[in-house]
Image (cartoon, rainbow, N blue to C red; front, side):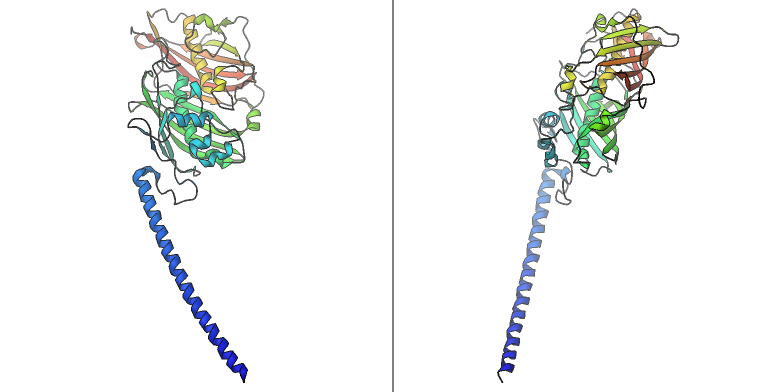
Length: 435
């Protein structure tokens, strides 16, 4: 008799519990829906505020990780910059993470990718960055500037080129390296220590400029990225402009490599050099020609030929060279641009030795216009190397209105390995003018 009563009581208790559970579940569901709606409103409000303050930022919460490159922050005066000179110096030789973000914290105790520092840092600020970090198959762009002091170390007297070719190269190529890092390219292989190197390039001077006292605008665009087996290859185009008018433009290819790959580079000849330059019996000191600025060669020999003349020059390398501390931090290597500058110094010496300056009262050198110079690097010069040798073939003609054009092709060896080739280095001599 007692069992049926117990069963009916149990059923009623279970029914009450089920009803209460359903009520609690409905209340909890309503709470979650209200919380979700509130969070969506907060998200929308935050995005609206961020977009109003920094229109280029986009929606920073829409994708995991950095949704876009850093937004701008004000600098001195009315100019707004993404990165100031202080930021760039931090990236060049300080904490990469403090410049580009926490993604780069892994380099706090490791050597990381850098741009040049000290005298070779030829960027003053970054004004624009367009691109998506980690999405290297999408278009990306950088706009930067460099302020050139009147007494900059590379600004020389009137008899020198209006703008040293190596300086134009550094102004144009350094933004490529910064853009590559800002896109998180070296973090494609975060477990690897990668070294950033220029492989190929070309540049054309469209009209001469005076650097001293001017602000030069530099821009670069990422064209393509390819990754394989711990190596990354990227292509860029670049432009330099003065007051909005492009005066230097070209393209360049860079690569990220492991140290073992750099140490095992075979040079331009794919192994032992097919030949090495023969050192002439007579070498004259470069100092005989009193080159302005910093010299990248020690001795030279010029031998006349039929269609072109032969120039040999060399330098005993030593680890105390000024550029090793500037290029790069914790990764000393001679900039390839200075190898090209050495060739232009050879052209100046050649002109003086061949008597090409005699027709001019005040000879002036300037970079040839609309004449693409091309370079190829398949090796590097480090403090451990001993001998740098440069071999060039040089031709000269008499140009229009008393101009003397010089044209050279050259190769550069380090410790008997051919690692650079330079095509169409062109310099012109004209009558200068009194200041």
